Image (tube, rainbow, N blue to C red; front, side, top):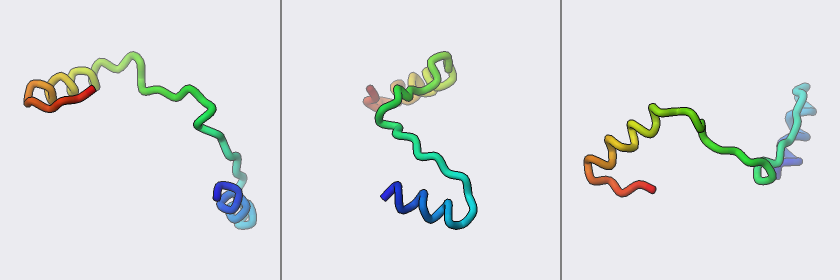
Length: 50
């Protein structure tokens, strides 16, 4: 499916590079205290989050 999409994009004149995200270590922002604060607010309302 990815190859079909990239081929179509190339045929339309776009430069395309497929990246295999499953082989990358992609994580959220490790220094973001904003998200942690928002998660804590949600926990205070009784939401069960991991």
